[in-house]
Structure formats: C-alpha cells, structure tokens
Length: 457
Image (tube, rainbow, N blue to C red; front, top):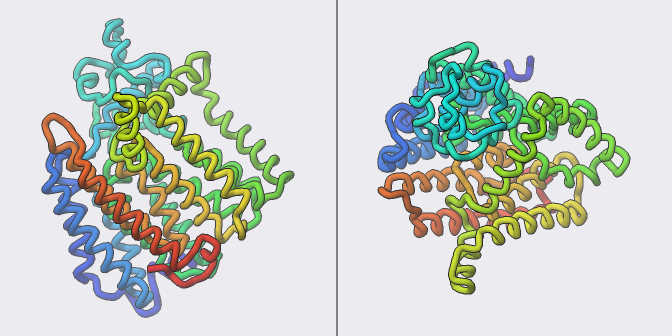
C-alpha cells in the first residue's frame, strides 16, 4: 500500500483544497443525492450539470501535479463518505433488496416466487408485508440479483431488522468498500502498464459512478471491483487468482461472461480452458446456495423478459423497432431483442479472433469495445449501466464513455412525464453525440493502437 499512500500524501503536499472544481462537484452530487426525486428532472439536470463541470475541471487539473491528484483522491473518498448519509433518491430498488433479504432470512428462496404470490397466499413472514410490497417497482417479476447481492441483502436485513434505511446503510458500506477497492486497483493497473496514475480519477470522480453506485445502491460497482482484481491478477501472470476474482464478478453481475472469448488468445487454448474450468467451478460454488429446481426457470424467465419485453433509453433497438412497426404494424421486440443480443455475441467472438494485438495492456480496451456494442444493441440502457464502461475507459486512451455517462442522465427526463413516456429527441441527441465522439476517437487512436500512451482527447 506504500504506492497508494504516496499518491494520497505527496511530498509537495495537497494543492488547492478549495478549488472551484471541488465545490462544483460536491454541490452537484449533493443536489442529486439529497434533494432530487426521480421525477424532478430540473433538479437532476442542475445537479449533474454542476457535477460534470467540476469533473471536467478536475480531470484537467489532476494531470498538472501530484498535489492535484492527491486532492482528487481525497475528494473521491470524501464524496463517497458523504453519500453514505443519503437515502437512495433516484431508484426504488432498495425495497426489493430488503424484500429479498428478509425472505432469505426467513428461509425462503427469493427466486421461488414473485412478490405478488406471497401477498396472494397471505403468509406471515417477518417483514414481508403489504407496506413493503406497495413500495416494490416490479412485484410481478422474479428477482434478478445473483448471489453476491443476495448475500449482502440478507446481511443488511439481519443487521437492520425492520429498517429499510438501516439496510440501505449496510449495503452502502459494502459498495463503498468495493468502490474504494476499484480505485486502488485502477491505480495499480495504471502503474503496472506505465500509464499516468491520474487516469484513476476518470472513475473515482465520475458523478454518475458516485450517484448511481454508493448513492443509489447499484451493484455494478461490486462487479467492477472484482473484474479489476481479475485484470490485475492476469496482468501479473496469476491466472488461477484471476479465475477466482472473475467468478466473484459473475456472481455480482452476469455481464463479465461476455468478455471471456477475449481471454482465449491471451491465455492460449490450454490456459483458457483451465481458466474457464476453474472459473466455472468457483462460480458454481458461489451460486450453489441459490440453485434448486426453480432457480434456472426463474432466472431464464427474467432473462427472457429483459431481452423480449423491457425497453428503455435504447438506440439501435429503437431504430429496428420503428422498422418493425413499418413492416409488420406492431412491436417486434420478441424477435429484435434476441437478434441484437446474438449480433453482439457474434461481434465479440469475431473481434476476439481478429484482434491484432491480444496483449494484457490492450485487454481493457477490447472489453470496452465489447460492452459498448452490447449497450448500443441493448433494449434497455439505464444510466448506471455506464459504470463499467467508465471504469474501463480509465485504462484506455478513449473518453467517449465519460460523455456517455453524462448524457445518459438525460434519460431521467422520461420519469418527469405523467404518464411515463420517453423523449426520443433527447435519446437521439445522447447517442448521436456519443457516436460522434467515439468515431472521432477511434480515428485518432484506432483499437489497434490503444497501447500507445497518447490520449485521444
């Protein structure tokens, strides 16, 4: 940890504790986290606008001196500690977290039945009541949260029985530790690959990461921490340790599965098969407490709904849906969603086979391309889905995920309409700008050149 202390306490001291970017970032994050409700887009836009302005200034300042970098790291820690005190305002998922945790404590698998079933049966389960049920945003859907999340839900329910606020605080503590671990791992990876350590602030100070991670309890930050741990182990030639970390990432979110084809040429056929076998075994162990005859049916049902029914803030899918309406006269999501998912898989496999420089220092860039294609093809793209691309961007010369993380917050305007509807003009603006910035960066720094140290922007 000596290298981390060196960056936190530089020889020249910490510069400018009251610089403008600190105030802008803190004020913006505070507005969104403590005051803005999901339907109050004016407050959300104001808060994110201020915080992203401070973020842009911070990234520019951090490259200038060790003192500025230290200030950025301390600000990242301070803002996360501040967010421990904020109840999730932009998401009501906390109520499902508590529901699942209380079911687990009572000896019921949260995957067995939908919440509506428990209300219909009239079972007397501690903490599972009509008041909590009425707060759920998806009472007619099976839970979708894998074992890491379920374990934390149960722990939170045990340590804070009868208190949703208390459970939220316990979950925040866990995500805070994950997030700080992710920042440390980014610093280690940047040092290992000889890149500027200031790149860690790309993730550490990103307002979307702050607000949607510790602020609104999205478990993407736990997946990021585990995935970065796997990256670090792979970069240091420790594939067995990496397999364990990768299993943890899958147990937090299933998304890391999509990156596994990119490992084959880096590890070789024999090494990759050993890695996959060990990772699969450990993933099975982590999932074992949840697996029974109902688990796979419930999980499959949830995945079917995700690809065939849910839609929010999408890009290419909406164009395909429009074409489907023009051709068939109705929404073809049941076919378009799986088709786009298949195209994403084919892209990743093809890219893995044709990648010109399959080296570990280029691995984050390859993963960033994969997750970007996945999101552009997705039927549902919530703002917090950008947490992983932002983390990967910190290890590459590309900065288009930072633009995307800011523009994705425009999707909160959809909740301000009564009844709910999507503003397609703003969606087109979001993806138009992101595509333009990405293409510009790919032209200046093509994927085959991501090992070079110059930044594209």
